Length: 300
Image 1 (spheres, rainbow, N blue to C red):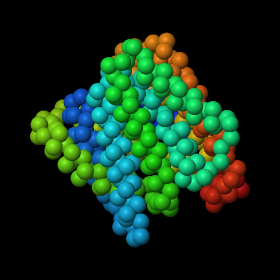
Image 2 (cartoon, rainbow, N blue to C red):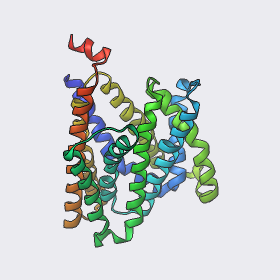
Image 3 (cartoon, rainbow, N blue to C red):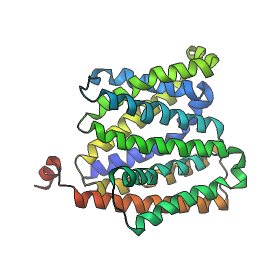
Image 4 (cartoon, rainbow, N blue to C red):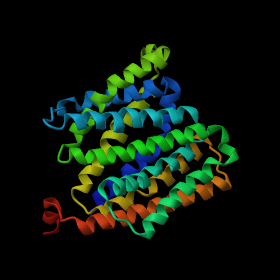
């Protein structure tokens, strides 16, 4: 891998890890639903030139926009609004990886062996250990909302297969276009006062929203998609594993979140399981997939 591409992956890791800070600050200042609405509004404005009608795929676009957009981000934002210990949320959010594998087995009949089966069990055991930690007992609802958001993320991954070949910016444009009216309606019902106070939000809050919308969503996911076009999955995927560890470190530094022994054990179990699934799934995909034209060109 070229050094500049490795630097891009590490930069994206840092963006995704640090994103817990602007998300938390924006949710507290603007409200969970209003914050996500504004984030997607920013994404929509930027990606509007790439918004294209996709004949024969619009039903999947609408479903994907609801599940991977409004529902996923809405649940995640609500979890941040209800939690003070965002370290636990950063780890629980990694359940999207085993959820994706389980759905692939159920829907696409993907065959897995005992290492990944064991890894799935480790992931859920780790979150269960954290869930029963007395230090975050008051935040258990936030933890399970994150688990629900992780399931939506996994479902979104499968739905994205229906949009194969669609440019990344077009997908993000549709995610935003579908999510904005849904979130606007939800915010009008549940957060009317917050929605009415948008004009009075501070520059710091708008900076947080811009960071999440432009850097985390567009640069992060767009950059990763670009890298996956040029390198094997087994090369790129493992390099994203530091993200949850960095998120925990950042949460401790910025928010002074407590780290208990039970959280360390649960977090370690989950992250070990995620690492096993990521490494073995990436290898399996590369073993079963023919090289893309770009990969063949780079190898020449």
